[in-house]
Length: 480
Image 1 (cartoon, helix red, strand yellow):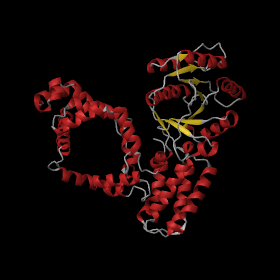
Image 2: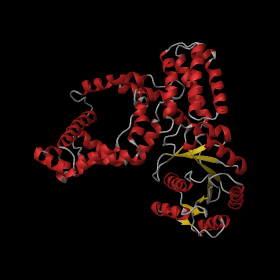
Image 3: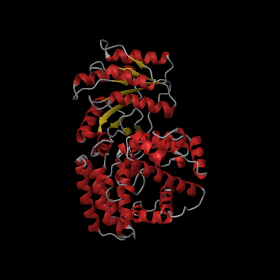
Image 4: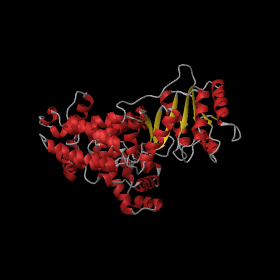
């Protein structure tokens, strides 16, 4: 995932500072040297790095930090604040027209993911802003671009306006806007053409579309995996077209993350969304403060909670909680919850959103093999309806049949059933307000693994006036 290399380097830079009480000027200088190298390796624009490091150094060398008893933590807090400010400070909402429909233009180089992002954005805004979108296919040059947008529209049940590839994109955009008004659509997203490079023909066409439909937002879609090239492209588009916002795609990929840290500073335009996967619901608003938390390895609990809320039905969650309390939780519930978790994203990424987990040694290299979950599901689905509802009836004869039906070993079947029963007992005890027998001992062993408790305890920022951060700390203490 993006920023993992940067996160590791920054954690190395701050590890000794976090353990200290008071810090010296030399401690700060040494840490800043490592921060500078970490940012440059992450492909952050060198001018941005220079200004960022200077700002942090100036604030970190102030009397308030050097005289503080938790100076190391204060330095990390300064870096957090500067990272947040570097990426925009606060999350910015999309612009909306006073009189519908609102018009968005999707622009960018070929291959950046404009067409797919247009569908993702329409889907997100329909679900979260209660709008009725229409997609307009104005890319007449790339082979199959129109077909791709129509396929996306069909999958999402969102109408797509197109006039083929023999009509000018300016006319398509204008007619698409007229059709949206006729159908009482309140959002129009125009998918424009890209090139492999920025050229005058492309820019003239985009300027003509802009003048014709007067969009509220001109989104520049940028591939985060292109690093500094992404920043150069953003700067060029902004100079010639005056974009309003940026959407970063492939931020979930193997990218160093420099584009996210540079684009706002170079262009002055905010990042408003990020693509987080290939699925058509894999798009999120960009929150600078949450991204700063991720970069510093402090997790992103708010995003994790929001993803859970999107996937979990509140009434169903209450029913499951009741079943857990009454020890009636069965394999059908297990599969349902496992599917919900997988819909939230790769499990290794979800784990790293939990504050403290990113600091556990080896977590940077940790990957959850999704195939193991498929094997578990195959075992459960090889059970009969009665067996899934009452796991206690799974004797050895039935288990051998399940193993054969799922093409897994009897050992794997026995292990899954044993773990399921242990988990059910724990959940029943916790739901009932009791500490299940043996759980204290088990949690103690877990806490000793790699110094988990210490890692989580040392992972938060020093106290600030924001109550949300104090609440996070209290939660961490209770877990310990």
